Structure formats: C-alpha cells, structure tokens
Amino acid sequence: MSAKWQAIFRGIICSLFILSGVAKLFPIWAFEKQLVDLGFFTWESSAVFARLIIGLELGIGFCFLVPHFTKRFVIPVTALLLVAFCIHLIVQMIQFGPMDGNCGCFGQLIPMTPLEAFLKNVATLVILYFLWKKTEDPKPGNFFIPLSVYLLSTLLVFIGFPQKSSGESATPVAQEITPSDNNSPELAAIDSTSETKENPVPSTTNVKADTSQKNNPKPTSSAPKIISKYTSFVPAEFQVNQGEKLICLFLPGCEHCIETAKELATMEKSVGLPPVHILFMDEETFKINDFFAQTNFKKSYSVISIPNFWKLMGGNSSTPGVTLLNDGQILQFFQGTGDEKFNAEKLKGLLKR
Image (cartoon, rainbow, N blue to C red; front, side, top):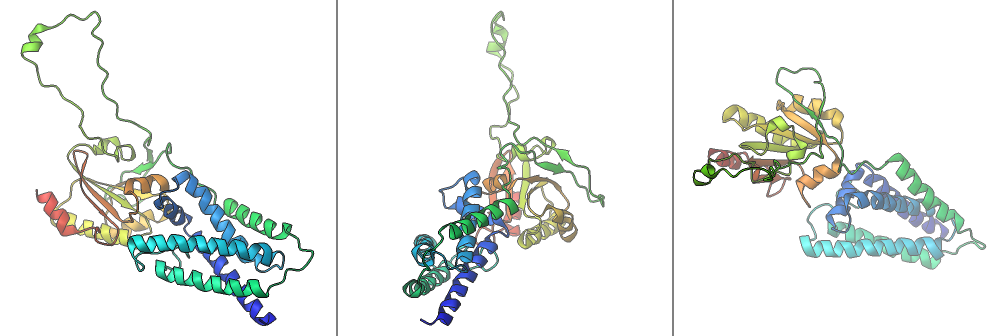
C-alpha cells in the first residue's frame, strides 16, 4: 500500500470517528437515553459513560493524525471498539430487525439502521486491517501522545457538555397560561419531591370508645386509591388523581409534538377535552412560546429534567406522549410516531365512554 493510500485511509477513519463523536453531542441526552434503554445504565451513570465514549471516539479520530503507537495501540483499540459495536448491532438486529430504528452511530444527525451501521463497521474493520499490515510505528514512539489526545478530548467533552442534575430532587417550573396571555407569565415553582401522605391515625390512648358509631358507621372520605406517577410534576390545583385528565409529554422543538398539539387543539374546539397539563422536557425551553404560538394550544405546563421526563415516558418510548387518566389510573398512553402514536379518533371514543 502506497503512502498516498495510507493517508487516504487514515483520513477516512479519522473523519468517521470525529463525525460520530461530534454527532452524538447534539443532543447528548439522546445518546444518554440510548445507553439507558440498553438496560445496563441508570441516567446518572449513562451521563458519565456517554461522555467517556464520545471522548474515546474523538480521541481515536485525532490519534490517526499523529504517527505514534498507531499500529501497537491505536488500531487495536479502534478495532476492539468496532467489534463491540458490531456485537451490539447483531443483538439489536435479532431483537428488533435489521431495518428497525436508528442505531445512533451518528446520533440524530445521520440516522442509520442497524444493518447499515453493521456494514459500515465491517468496512471500517477491513480498512483498519490493511492499515495495520502496512503501518510501521516510528521508533522510539511516544505513548504519552495518543494517551494525552484521548484524555484531552474527554476533558473537553465534560467541560463543554457538563452533566445536568439527575432531577430526582429538582424543582420543575410550572406556568399557568390562559388564551389571553400574550406575554411571558410569572413562574410558579412546584416541589417535585412532594409525596402524598395519608392522614395520620389518631392514637386511641385515653380515648373512650363510642359504641354508637360501631353499629351505625358513617361513610368517611378517603384519598384516591391510585396515586398517579405524574402527581409530583403537576400543580396541586390540577388534581391529577381526580376525574379525567390529559397529560402531554412534549419537547418544545419536536415537530411531531407540535403536530400532536395542533390535533388536540382542533379536537378541543370540536368535541372538547378534559383538563390538560403539558410536561416539557428541559431542552430548548426557549422555544416554548413559539410552541404555543404555532399550535394555539395554550395550557398549563411544567418544565422537568431530562431523566425525569424519560422515566415518565417509559423505556424504549419516544415523543410525543399523551396520557389519558381517570382518577389517577392510566386509561390510554399514546407515544411516538409508530403503532402507538396519538390517535384523535381513539381518544374521542375513550372520552365518550
């Protein structure tokens, strides 16, 4: 292999890994969610591992630009990483099919099916083999150079994209919006860590028994049997555990969320809707006003952390999410853009019951 072809192959691999790392950064939460969906990571650990993996990819890309320990270290590490990705893709293809979904190799920038990603990785492994056969490391080499490149790349990822709080004890922001509101309303905070507590049972010490109540007990009011998982993320006055309620889980900049909100706005005008509260993910929140302007669906809303948002959505789910509740019980959950996507006619049928 001539020096020209070696340079071309180095450039190809360098470009692939740098593009892969940069693409995963926008948005980085999507890659974090992908790690969580694998079942091996929590939101807290996925935030760390996502940045370590992205730093590794960027480091590998830049290491192909410097001729130090390329054959003895950089190429073997790159090959091992690609083999690990291939194994993951094979499992994914067996479970969900070779053409289902986005593998996430290039984040949301360039969607690729598992089969396309697998073929890309195999082709890259072939190129790596030829490079390994023809590459000779200069002696003496400096192992500190590729190691420093990786550490610096990882450090820059952690600095440029700091981890957000897991949101377990964060305070989401709630806003009440009425159709007459043209300006940004004032913010009112709700405590996301609030818990529903039962009324304490009074002690029977020094209390005389009332026998008249035993024979003719009076009905007593009790708290709802079902406490919705949304309780801590909506205003108390919304009374999510009483009667029919709609909870919408939207991203402010999500096109599918905007279209769903438009459908709900149309449906509200024609047949009416139960009380609605929107839970926005804490991403691109500056687009919330534009969201309401585009959809004409102005409702009370809360902004909640990314981990809490996806915990409410559930594993392997995607936006938009629309939940119909009755006394805190989930009657219907619409999600994503596939078979379980929002269906206005189905919601109408459920509301008629």
